[in-house]
Image (cartoon, rainbow, N blue to C red; front, side, top):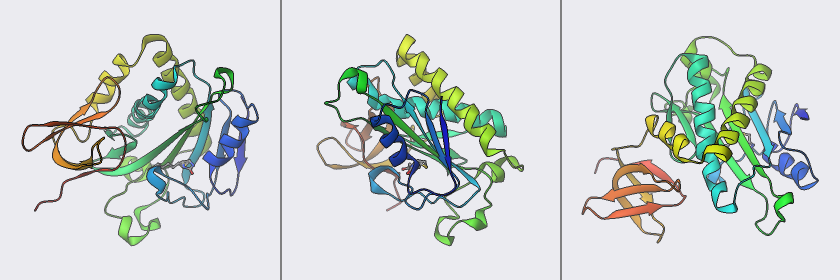
Length: 249
Ligand code: BTN
């Protein structure tokens, strides 16, 4: 499995997709010390502070039906979340669909991107981008983020070797995706639910019909879609989009 390191790059996801479309094998990994255009879901920016975070993208070619690919983000959440708990000794929470938190503060973002849907089965790939705040101190972040983010260093009180962390993450991710291929989504969803940050909390989101819903999170279903129970008791399904804790009115 090839591993490419760049001191500086626009986005490791962009590079990994380029390599995948040229035929890179499953497990091919791109990581960088700094990203000038690190990207998050919904076009958001990902702050890539030079040298102290892990910014990586892993090409996978899982044997899964196209409909199953959307669950890869949750599968990655379990893989990375359990690894971080082991390494820091602190419990993580998974915020649907792609964030990992410690004590309500974001430490990890996941951006999974698939090949174009019309690709032949043998050309299909998924690129799993993971950004982890590792050795930064809170003061390294812009003032406006300091109350909402955390790092492995802040949680564990020690620094981590980025390369070792990358290899551990890749190994864990590949074995979690193998489990998904062999045993399906149910056992992974059960693990995910144990770490669910939003479960039972009041939140706001946009449902599949584009309606803004304020309600209580009932967690993801067997398709990986979030269910939200509105104040009038109606149930709404959220496919993707932004979900946030409701502010008091
Ligand atoms: C999010 O929080 O919405 C997801 C953030 C994902 C960031 C990672 S960093 C490595 C990879 N390259 C990118 O441009 N994005 C992902």
